[in-house]
Structures are given as structure tokens and as C-alpha cells.
Image 1 (cartoon, helix red, strand yellow):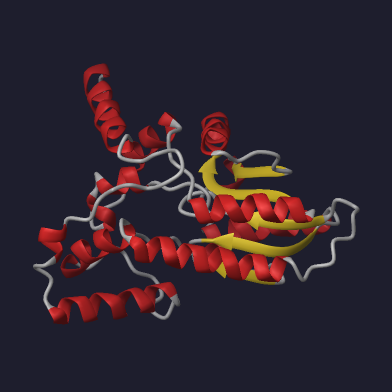
Image 2: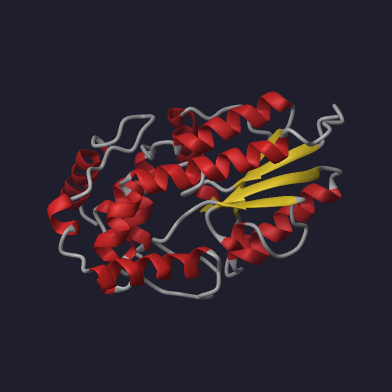
Length: 257
């Protein structure tokens, strides 16, 4: 991409990103557009989201055309924030039951994208999951290091740390993005993680489920006890070397196997 187009892209994302504070997503749903959804569409899309969130739908590629406005309204409205808060509350209720040994080996694992950081400014400019994913434009967004925190997750992160858990981050981002990822995490309010795993060359071509399972196995081999795990994809949570309890955050915009 030439310098002129890159500058234009960066400015466009910056304008969308300014609709967000550092602590609260502020994209406003288009109420006029949402009224165009028929009752059948609302019912269909709500049930569609249920199947993808529970993994009943299995592999899926994109948001159905009739549900794009519904997903926009959901992701920018009170329901998404409320669902995220409930997931954080349930996670914290479990975390408080764990007896922390005090040897630094009790761990809570977090995914990053759509778990700790929100890429909603990017997806708002790219159809809320209705467009084919483009690695190049998404990497350009990542390099801005401006993704805001998901506030429910930031609260959970801080509270499990205070309880004595060590925080481990396992992301599908690649090793060359380590510096911008760390910069973005700090910008969004995160700190004091024990370990940050990113995909290296040896991880190329692995599914997220296999890659993240292998990183959890590495932790277990080092004597860490994985009590809790938080992610927006089932591939963040399933596989082997899984946590005692895994908590799925809402994300009807995309699926990663």
C-alpha cells in the first residue's frame, strides 16, 4: 500500500476510533435503520446468534446479510455490554472460590482480541463481520495500537490479579506484533501480565485450537495451574490442557477454528 493510501486508511480508522473513549465503546446504533428489521428478522438473528455463541452452528464464515444491522445494534448497544458484564461476574464468582497457593503458579488465561481489547472500531468500518476478513487492513489497524479495552474484561483482569492469580495472555497475533500489542494493552489499562504468547514461525498453519492448547500445555509443563480461561472463541477455550473453568465472551462477528 502506498504512503498516500496508508495515510488515508489511518486517518479513517482514527476518526472511527475517536467515537470510543479509552474506557467505553460509544458507537451509536442507527435507530432509524434498526426499525427496518422485521419481527421475523429479529427473531431469526437472535436465534442465529444463540447457535453461534453456543457452538451449535460449528464453523461459519460470515454474518448473514439479513443480520448485519442486528449485529451492529447488538455490538453497539446495551445488550453486548450486559452480556459481557455477566460473563465477567460469573468468572469472578468462580475465581473467588479458588484457593491461591501463593507459589506464583495459579494462573488465569486471557485471549486478547474481542476479549481484552475491542476491535469494534475496525469492524464498524468493515461491515460488522459481513465482509471477508482482510489480513492486510486488520494488521494496519493492529499497528495503530488504539483498540479500547472491553471494560467488563478490564475489571475482571484487575480483580483476578488482586486475588493472587498470575495473568497469562495467549493471542493469535504474530510475534512481529509483540511491541504494538504490548503498547495497546498498556494504552487500554492492562499491566503486570506474567506471560504473553504470540504465534511464532513454528505455529504457522496451526488452528487456533491446537496452537492455544499447546501453549497451555507448555504452562502446565512448567508447573502452572490453569484455573480460569476467558475468550471470545471456542478455540480459545477447548482442546487439551484446558482450564478448570472456561468462560465464553460474546462475539457474533466472526469465527476462528
